[in-house]
Length: 428
Image 1 (cartoon, one colour):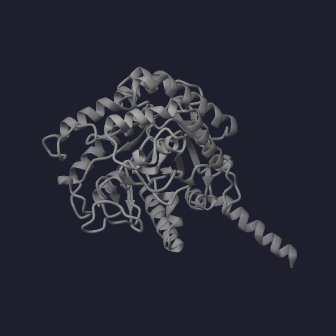
Image 2 (image 1 turned 90 degrees about the vertical axis):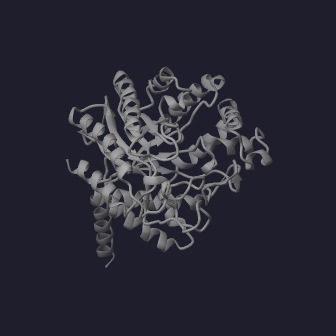
Image 3 (image 1 turned 45 degrees about the vertical axis):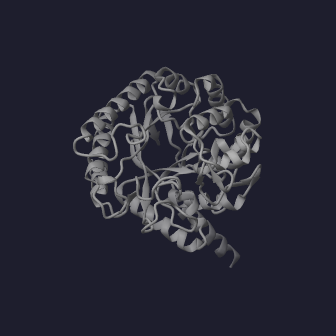
């Protein structure tokens, strides 16, 4: 009887291993490889994926997660960019941040919170999907660098909570790179995450092949030219440290391109030249960067597409010079008429996505440096609450973070025309 039970356990264990991938994504020159074969992907941002299994109704959250992963897999999406966890609680820079927090208070980590990410990674492994996990944030919506500065008395509580001017935000955030205590705290969180063991599978994250890469942060910027040297040093020191404790996974910075390096393409190139930075990233935000006024239209879209193509090609050239892959890991466009309703049209967004995907497809055909695209962002089964612009605690997570209008950039499962374009390129 005991032998039969042992045999059954062995069969079940083997069955799980047979359905889950056991190969890490590797970088070789301008390409990613899995089992020696080139890996080119169209993926999406799914920043809230690690939080779904932690909702007040965990079963409902897990069911939603499973349905959404099945949906993405059916469309050919197998790469997801995900937030590891937020830092701190309460208002920050005038907005509500992502809840619940991984680090509720200074150096107080909630291990239960990682069970949500554990569940996501287990389910992704079953579907042979890969995650890019960003470890902190330049921006306030998940706590990030401003919270570390607050915990180390560089920003007082009142200032942290109120809405900062753009110059104030740049001044404060730039101090992170010269705040030794802040960087030590950041490293403590990195340690806590990377050395974590998955509750469901028993595998340590170091040995989890469903993780493609660690990303130092979401859009880390020097913010001020005076912080550039400290910024460069932090990138090198952090990448070296992560590689010293985890040789299995790729490392990237999480930058937007030269728009995130004080419009200095040489600085962008320099920070990605380091041996432990395995690939380059860029983000493209036409609305935030003033490439159109008010809303995308048939009249202004051609110029937006022209600027986007030029931005991609400039950074593709840098990737070729460094002989490393490039991922266009964030890009989005509001729905037609700047509407937030899922029923509104997405014809302009579809045309915009189609242009970016075409550049990726041409790169794939020629074994080029544009290895992946992660559009922003998957809204899945969620829907904005009628008559309410911004996220409130208890609402379903969507593709738009708490500080942005819900429905602004989210691609919902009901956006058939957009998914048709995705599927068209992945079928090829």
